Each structure stands twice: as C-alpha cells, then as structure tokens.
Length: 465
Length: 102
Image (cartoon, chains in turn yellow, green):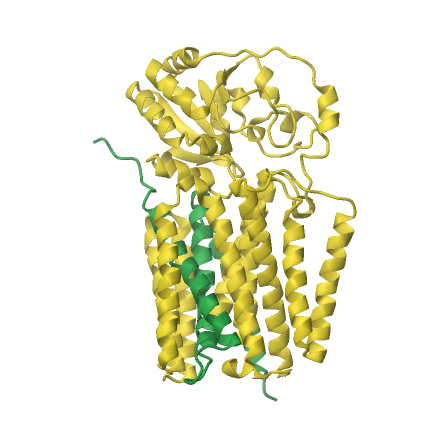
C-alpha cells in the first residue's frame, strides 16, 4: 500500500501524460507518440489505484477478469470497425463513459464508506452534490449517445423528431433536475437519487431526438464534452486529480469541437440544440421549385474533362462515406496523377458525420495528408482550378449561401466550387441536400451532373481515363 | 484559516480547462476524429473509481450491490480504454505523408 500523497502525485503525472497525448495531435508526425503517452498515463493511473488500495484479496481477481473481458471486447471492436463507421463507434463509446460514470456514482452512493465519503444516509454534502452532478451528466451522456448512435447507424430515422411543447417540456425537466439535486442533498433520500437518474436518462433522450442527421457532428462533439464533465464530477467525488484533469480536458475539447462545427454551419449552438432544422420548411421550398435545365453526363464525359485539365480539386462529403467510394476515388486520382494532373482535396469542416470524418477516410485510402486541405486553405484555389469533382457533398458547395439572404444556409461558409472552369457533381438524383434546399450549383452553366452511385461512377471514370 | 481542499481541486479543474482550451485549438483539423476517440479513451480513467467500487466488498462477500455496479463500470470503462486507444492507433497509422519520388 502506498501513501495517499504518493498516489496523488502519480495521478497528477498521469493527468500530465493525458495533456501530452492531446498535444501530440497537433501534427500527424507527433500523434502516434501522443497516443503512447495516453496509454502510459492510463497504465500509471490503474496501477496506482491498485497499489493504493493494497487489498489483493479475491476481489482483485474479479477486477482483472472484468478488465480482461471489457478489454477484449474493446480491442475486438477497434480492429473490426470499418473507418466509415467511426461516428457510430465514437457515439457508442461516449455512451459507455456516461454509463460507467453513472455506475460509479451509484456505487459510491450505496457504499460511501469505501470512498471515504461518510456513511449511507449521511454522505458529506459536497461529495453528494458532486456525485449527483456526475451521475446526472453521465446519465444524459448515456441516453443522448444511445440516440445519436441509433440515428447514425440508421436504426432510427435521421430526421428530426419534434412535437408540440417540446422545448417547454425539456425546460421543465431540466429545472426539475436541479430541484431534485437540491432535495436529494437536503434529505439524502435514496429514492430521490433513483428519480434523478431516471429523469436524467429521459432528458438525454429528449434532447437528442429533435436533432437531425447532418447536425450529428455537433451532437457527437457535444456529447464528447458531456462525457468529460461527467468524469470531472466523479473526479471531484473521488478527490482524484487524474480524473479532474482529464474531465476538464475532454470537456473543453468537446466544447471547442462543437463550436468549430457550429461555425462551419454558421449556426448558433442553441439553434442546433433546439433542433428541427431542415424538417419544417419543406412546403415553402417545394412551392418555389421550378423546373430548371441541368446538364448531365456520363463517365466518358467526365474522364474527357479531367484528362484535359491541369489541376483537379476533389470535394468529398458524406455521400462518399455512404458509398464507400474512398478507395475507388484514390485509384482515380492515381491515374490522374500519372497524366501529370495536379490533384488536391478540399474538406469542409462539417463534411461527414463527425469532425475530421473525411480526413480519416482519405487517410484510410492512402491519400497523403499533405494533399488534403481545409476550407480556408484551399478556397482561393478553386478559381484557378480546371475541374472540381464533387463526390457526396452537397449543401457545403451551395453558392446560395453567399447570395440569397432568404436561404436557411445563408452565411454558412461554403467551398467556392462554382469558380472552377468546370464542375463535376456526382449524385444519385437531383434531390435537395439535408438542409432541404435546392443546390444552385446543379443549374450552373459550368456544371455537369453525373447521376450515379459515387463508387460506381468513380470506377467508370478511371476506366475511361 | 485553513483552505478547504475542495478549493485546490477546483483550481486544478479550472486551470485544466484552460490547458485543454489551448491544447485542443492547436490540434490540426485533419486529426479531429482521432482526437475524439482518444478523449474517449482517456475519459475512461473513470475506471479508477470503478476499481475502488469493485474492491469495496470485504473478503466474506466480494459481491454486494455496490461492488457489482463497480465491476460493471470496470468492464464498460475497459471496453472504452482498449477500444479507444487501439482505434486511435489504427487511425493514426494511416496518416502518411506524400512519398517523395526523388
């Protein structure tokens, strides 16, 4: 058994290692080392916990057994999961962090002696407040992430679910959570603790159902943040520095990512959270719709245009992930490069279903990361490029965001695809994108629509090159 | 007058938020997905609480309601720790620079 001072220092070390793990992600070269620091920090934290308990009784075997079982499941998932399913995986993992926080809080509530928090029915006030906050946020994270997972997985429809009185209901529930925590702390009643958990599960569920599929990048980042705050709440209860530091890091990380995603859509955080975007104004856009001519072509036309280009910019989006077209795309680009055509990739911050989604898919397909550019880095290059190849992206290329103040996406930063000499737009049909608005790009003089499955079209173009 | 230890923890917490703020802004956008998976893994350091909870039973009864929740939390956190770090590693291994042809 080691002294609690020594273990506190080791927890601090592991907290610092976690900071270095995130720091490593500032560039792909240092990132692998960063991940190693993270693993090291975790090993230190777990080892120190064992040493500080010092009770190597038969219970210890079960701890190892459960770590082994969970670890094997985790490792199996990590190796099997296809890269296109990363958003679902991350949402699923968030739900586990949330549930683990809830379980630890339940355990601490039922047996406070084990954590030095007092005795049942007489838990220290500060600890009880921290514990209930941790438990409530954990429960919200859990049920919210489950809904996000179901929506991403397609088990639940991605379209927003709204009903009358939704916002007042949510507001009442949120206020009641605060009231319950207050009553719980003054009465120490275990019934109130269970009610708190149930109500928190409920609000997590209600908060996420009105948010649509394409807003998932914000939701995932937000739940990432919540999972951090839940961990921090438990960290305060356990007086554990590693947990407090980590919770704060993860909490602010998720908050920053949500901010970046909201900015990428030019929407306020509250606008996203209140939900219902893209579902309400179907009728108004429907009535405005007039038949406008579009030019459509086939793989042969596209190959011809690209063969005669000197520079091509690829604009990938969620559709590429759905069609699993990243490998076919890279093969097409390889052929283009053999013909001395300069190719780069342009990634919009909200392309895909989670932050950085497209980058991972392109990396999986062996696209070197120094050919992949963010919106600000590449947006000026469209004017000098010959061909823009839009594959699976839609709203993020819509020039209406720059011209029409009436449009729901007005002001959203978009890729200036229309400035290219010609635009190739791979899409299944002319249907509007997620925001429910027509893409003006379809009807431009320099746009050639390629109506087909993204993967099949890309392969056909490669054959024709 | 003595300062409540809670204040020290609160200080660590607030300062860590600031550290997190600056560190995360320096993360390159192309690594935002690995950032999410690695934050997932590290937030599962909550396993330390789960281990304490799991070992809270005495030698006569390893399993009581409290420790069972602890054991379940251990398993959940372990899924996250192993899954999170390994999938991050798998992703990071894919990020390659352009091969120089000279």
